[in-house]
Structure formats: structure tokens, C-alpha cells
Amino acid sequence: MSQQLDPLSLEVVDLMANLVALFHKEYEEAASARSLTGAQAKVLALLRRGPMPMRQIAQTLSCEPSNITGIVDRLELRGLVARQADPDDRRIKRVAATEAGRTASEELRESLNFARAPLAALEPTEREQLRDLLQRIVEGAQQH
Amino acid sequence: MSQQLDPLSLEVVDLMANLVALFHKEYEEAASARSLTGAQAKVLALLRRGPMPMRQIAQTLSCEPSNITGIVDRLELRGLVARQADPDDRRIKRVAATEAGRTASEELRESLNFARAPLAALEPTEREQLRDLLQRIVEGAQQH
DNA sequence: GCTGAATATTTGACATGGTGAACCTTTCTG
DNA sequence: CAGAAAGGTTCACCATGTCAAATATTCAGC
View 1 (tube, rainbow over the protein chains, first blue to last red):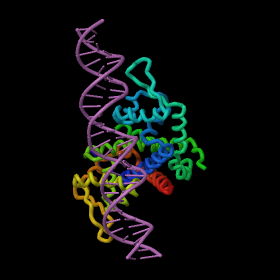
View 2 (cartoon, rainbow over the protein chains, first blue to last red):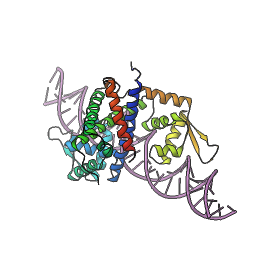
View 3 (tube, protein in one colour):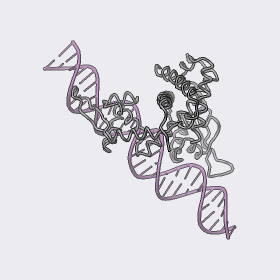
View 4 (cartoon, each protein chain N blue to C red):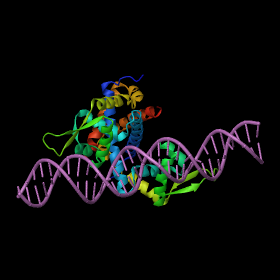
């Protein structure tokens, strides 16, 4: 059912594994520099698009809702986030980033200069190639 | 000091963030299917190249040695790994994968069909392009 | 409208991952 | 040989993650 990958594809997968490790490390460090954990930073980043119910956060991050409770608790304690009642459904609590939360998340994003130098070293047409190829991979991988 | 990224590079970074999230999720699932955690799987994967001192494992994974103690403890309990004395320096304990450990790690690697379908959908020349571009990015990113 | 199923969140118990400090053993250095 | 340095472990502590149970609210069928 799952065929062997050709050597070239294996090489690409290994490179992506390296990329993942490097990205993950830099993300953790950037979060830590703002006294955030990676998980907290991820939730905060999600909320930049707007308030979101607990359950939806859990689904987006592929974890149990009970896990999100604790993370949001800690963010709320620090005033980076607030729980709001949903006017239409009183079971739902919408989590919204505060102004401080938005600022922190934005700063973190800007401080994250992952692969900045190597990207800058590419020719514009190469960057376009890379974007297009990555786009196809990501889209394909998202549908299982 | 850290200049703004051009929009195209930003797009690429966002795509890589997606890729990282997808990869991470699939890796955790593949490990979990073998009753391993992600961290345990990572250590086991490291040891496929040969035995390695605790400290070196910690350095490679960018964490504290005391953290590795627990992970290796749990792998050893399950017979996937063994601590060996180093003949030249009795302070050092070399961690070696057992036959079962190697098998488990190999199976996990083979079960990890990340991006298999989308990669197969690329033309051979496109795969080469992707490999070359990723190679340059990873190499560049590794040197800070 | 009432009853029971389903949904959103929280709580508690538990295992793991991670840090940092203190400690022991072994090795290195002056 | 004495003291510093290095490799591992232990301990205390907190964050992340799961699962099961509890609560509150909404929904569906009758």
C-alpha cells in the first residue's frame, strides 16, 4: 500500500526533517525570549486572526480541549488573552487576544528570522520556484 | 539588524511553518502507533548511526543531559536501548540501540510517508530543484 | 414543553518532557 | 597529590499532553 520512495524523494524528506528541526528550535527560542512556551506562542498566533472557541483551538492544534484549558489559563493569568462569553451559545467561551497579547505575538513573529539569510541569498526566480514547489507539497500533504 | 523580509520570502517562511506543523503531527502519530513518544523516537533515530554518549545526545537534541537520562531510562526499560561502559573513559556511558530498538526505529522511518503522494506528483526535474533549493536553505540556516 | 442525547468546557489523576541545582565518580592539570 | 573540570544521575519543579468524569447548555424527537 505505501510504496518505497525513490532515493531522490527520500533525500527531500530528509532535508525537510532537518528543516523542521531547525525551525522548531528557533521557534522555541524566540518564544522563550518572551517568557512564552512554544504551545503558548502557537495559541497566541492562532488568535491573531480573531477570537476562537476553545474547541476550535484544540482542533486546529490537534490536541484535546482539556489541554487548551491549561494553556489559556496561563496566558490569561498574564493578561495576554481573555475568555469571552459567546452571545449565541452560552456553552462556548471565545478566547480573544488582548492588546498585549497581539503585540507579543506580532513581535515574536517579526523576531523569527528563520532562514532569512539563506532565503535572501536566492535569486528572485528561485524563491518563486521554491514557493510554488512548497505550495504544491503542503497542499498535497494536507489532504492526508 | 534584522531587515524586513520581502513578501515573497514571507510567503515561503509561512509555507515552511505549515510544512513543519504537518511533519510534526505525522511524526508524533507514527511514533505513537509504536507506543513511542516523539522524543523517544528521536533518540532512537539518532542511535541508528551507532552508540552515543548521553552528553552528545543532549547536545544534538539541544537539551539538558538530565533530560536524556529519563528518556533513555524509559527506552531501556522496554529493551530498545542499552547503556554500555566506555572502555577509555569510565565517566562516559554509551547508549546503544538493541536489535529491537533498531527494528522499531527502522519501521517507524519506513512508515513515515510524509508528503509521499505530493512528492510523487512532482516531475523528476522538479524534485531535483526542490532538493537543491532546500539543501541551500538548510545549509544556510544551520550556520546561524 | 419535556426528556434524553449531544456539545463545550472544566477538573483531576497521571505520564512525559523539559530546566536547573546539587551530588558522585572519574579524569585532567598544575 | 590537590583541586578543577567533565559525564551522569537525582531531585524538585513546572508545562504539555492524555483520558475519564462532572457540569452546564443546547438540540432533537415526541
